[in-house]
Image 1 (cartoon, one colour):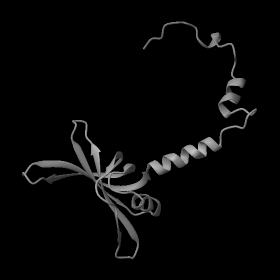
Image 2: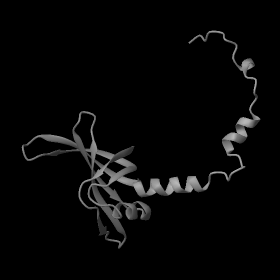
Image 3: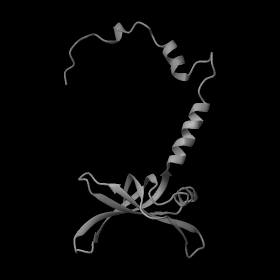
Image 4: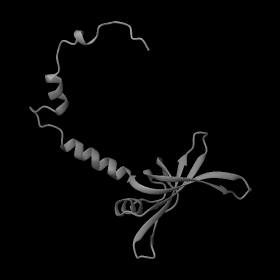
Length: 141
C-alpha cells in the first residue's frame, strides 16, 4: 500500500453503490496529468461518509484532490497497448467547495480593526536587534 495525493478532473459522474452489509460507498474515475504530457486514470473508491458525500456532490469534469492509499495497476487499451493506472481508496477529498469554505472561514477569523493578528504579536515580541544571531562566519558543510 502506498499513501498518496492525486489531483485531477473527474472523468464521468461518480456513482453510489451499496455494499453487502448495506453501507453506501462511492466510486469515481479521475484523470490526472502524468509528467510526460499523458493522462493517468485513477479508479477511486470511498467508504467513509465525508469522502463519499464530497465525491457524490461533484460532476463530470470537476477538479478534485484526493488523499488515500494507492495500488498501481496496468490495463490494455483497444490497440493492445499496456497503460498504467492507479486504484485509490480515498480517505480525504478536497474540492473547490472545500477551498472556498476554508477561505471564508479564514477571512472571518481575521482580526477586527485595531486588533493584531497572531503573526503581529510574535513580531512585536521578537528581538529588534538580530545582529548577535549571525556571526558572519562561513558555514562548513
